[in-house]
Image (tube, rainbow, N blue to C red; front, side):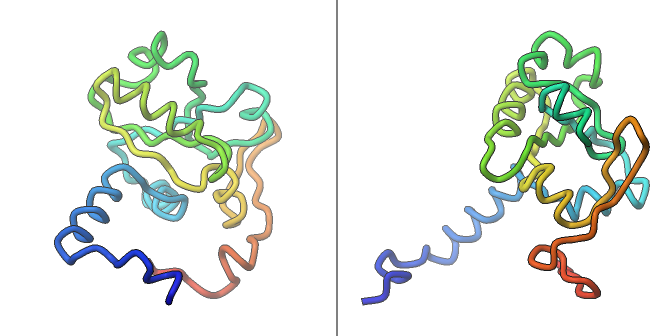
Length: 151
């Protein structure tokens, strides 16, 4: 028997509901970069990592608000009601989830940037440090040169 089909796929309406719901909670580095590159506003990108991690490099235009400080500082850093996108290290880190939860508790509409800083960097997107903005070559397994995901 197929290991993939041992548990049957969801019925159409259940699948539609699940995947549509999932997109209300998540975005990805490519979509965030596309909005930033197009100058689209209306949401705030929040890096929830430590000061040391922020200093190592962060998404240009993000604000630094470590998870432990969200409750105390959110309303002074992000206007209430503004949609927030959180990110942390990467897929093996649930820091963005914890940060998103804190913003949700405060009444903010919120999404996570799946993949976090790891995939932002692996896709060759710009990284800001005290020395300015740099780009590393993209990882061919995540963003092959000359091939657009177009998803």
